[in-house]
Length: 254
Image 1 (cartoon, rainbow, N blue to C red):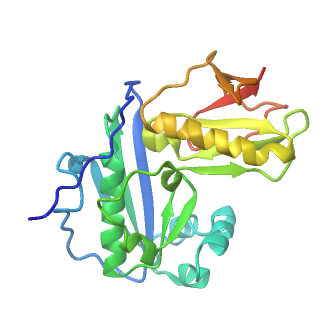
Image 2: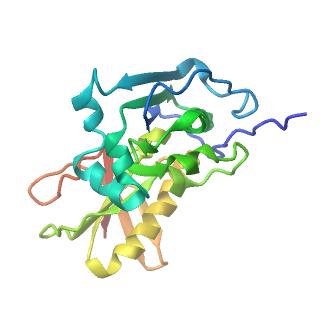
């Protein structure tokens, strides 16, 4: 008997009316997926009706496909993939999208990754998590265990921008919180505290993935000494624009 796949839970889930969305882009050398059997690899409650899988040919959509593998995303691929040249040469890609409102669990993520794994097993080169800006070799995604536990660092990136903004510091921010229906988080920090800021953002991202909510005006105590205040993230002449996928919350130190 096949062991059922358990849903990734959100033990602190609070509804907000927001959509949680995931988009994976899987690069291939052809329309490789001939069948999709999700039996035994996703929870029974996974929102299959919300699944949108499409195949795109480079011959028909060259600029659109290149948009996912050039510029900053190509720079990331050069660091994260063993053979970025193979990515450049790919002639097809699949998009895997799931969008649900106020999910009480994270089965939409399990579903998206299960489909990506199926495409990778059929023959793929690399997978881009479009909202987290994170690349994975196809071999890694193909081998994902459906019974693996949820790990927030697998779903969310924490980015430290190299350029210092005057009066703000190094922008350090998350990418991918829209996958949980939550805003991304950003803070400005001196260079010597980037690692500390990344740790704090990862911890807060895990809380939001569990279903917690951060609201403007809320204060967060860290290290037993310092307090962060949550305010809406609104780029201006002092606060840099880091091109978040959706909206964000700025964490300022009191």
